[in-house]
Every structure is written in structure tokens, then in C-alpha cells.
Length: 179
Image (cartoon, rainbow, N blue to C red; front, side, top):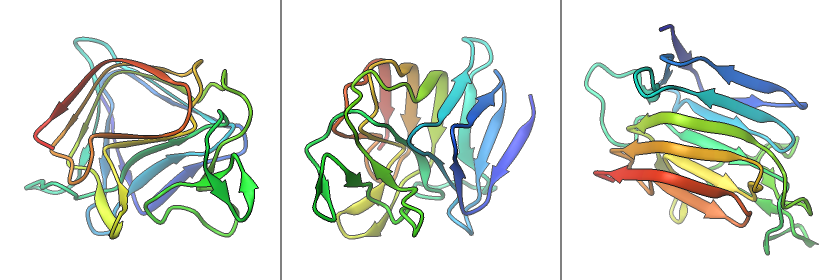
């Protein structure tokens, strides 16, 4: 039942596992375009319940499409992207890559596990960082098949509800509403 706020781009790094309990609310700060990035080799464990979903939303009193950056999940599955001449490596859209390469995705492990999203709702996320370089409700970059994405809804996103860049993740029970 707690509420937490994302200020700016928040990276989960160095093999960490971010666990979010059922009923928790995560607010993306509108003024700093709060964004959550699950980098390669880390996991998000956001397992809500039917009666206690995990909600990612805007911190605005009157929320609007594009208030915050959404969720970016980056894995090590195969992709046909190329980054700086390296085949199978890509730079995710949306301006989240930095000098440490925390916005890169791809590899050779189609069974990669970036965690689990179950009974999760994402609202008012996504925006155009640059033309054709947008963040979405949830952006997947080379996410592997051992990742679970089930019973997820994205509503009122300013760009796509979901966007995949390579990978082998099998998502089930997805809803996209008013995007």
C-alpha cells in the first residue's frame, strides 16, 4: 500500500533485483519525466494480485498522457540491432542511454530473465524524446523468454502502450487502453 516516486531516470544496475509488493503505487514525477530502466542483467519483480495490482502512474494532481517516461526493460536476448558496429547490440530509444551504456540491449541468451510483471497497470507514460525516438508505456529491448509478463494494462500512454526491440519474451493477457 506504499507510494514511491521516480525522479528523473532511475536505473536498476549491477545484477540487482527490484521487488515491488502487491498494492504499491509508483509515481513518475512529471517535472523530471521520471522513468524506470531495468538494465541488462538485472530484474524487476513486480507481482501484484487481482485485488492488489501494482500501479505505475503520474504524480500530477490532474494526470495527462506523457507525464512520465514509463518502464524500460533491457535484456540479453538476440536482436538484429547494431550499435557502434557491434552486431546484436542496440541502443534503446528515448534518451536513456548514458556514458555507462545503461541504455543498451541485446546479447546471445534467448532464455534471459529480466524478472516478472504480473497484475501491473501503467498509466500516463511515454513521450517523444526526439522524433521517432520515444519512450512508451513499457519498452522491451531484447527481453528473454524466461521473463514473465502477464495481466498487464497500459492506459493513456502518449506513444505506444508496448514496444518490442528484438527478444523472445512471451507476453500474455495484455491490455492497451486509450493510447
